[in-house]
Image (tube, rainbow, N blue to C red; front, side, top):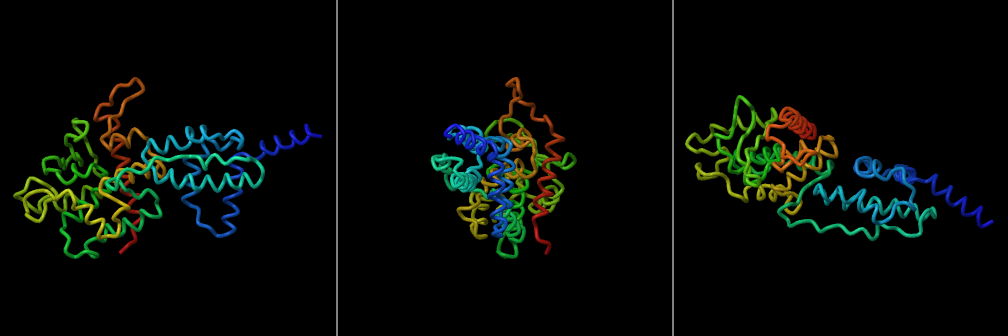
Length: 312
């Protein structure tokens, strides 16, 4: 009798893979009219491909840390990891109710604490859309703002370059015919090329001649030097995003969305973040490597952001 019960339990476990239990949990929530679009996206992107077909006894703490959370943490998406941990905790609780497991390993997953407030970032589409609409309507919400501040905010989102590099952009870095920026990246000390989407190009064109006697694109209130290092973050605070989004955080926003939603190649994204990227042989990529692909990615990113805007 004991052997029959053991066989029955093993068969039950085999018939209830992680994916099957997760889908049953989602279906129950759908009946309860819960909004799970972001949860489903996280599961499809970060979980199912790696553990979806495994049974719960196979899902040890170590396996979950390596196959699921390590990858998310390494790409800097700590907020995604935090939300996913909450999702998985509910799914594992469901598995425990079905007597598929006795121990819930998710409870012992430890995530690194987010870095300081300088890197706060919105990484969920449902939160990105309202923030974008406020940014694109900044002049209506804050009538005393400079045109250069409005454009700098938008360029920060569209190009996701380091804040210091954006505010110090010189007119000579703007290559009109090639529709790009070219400058020496502050971290790598190498020439960095930033292809400009149609939207970004038009924004730069709208202010490039605004201050003819300044060498900078984003000129501050004195009409000569570049905007201060706190300009963008102060604007975000006025919009109600202090502590939620920073100028530097736009890099994490783009990194997460390009990977998870637009499914762009990671090396393309890393190039545009001005990170050092090496090929399979450990050789650093040439700065012009995949430039056309990266240009297409930047346009797709801009079009995606535009699709989230509410027509005025």
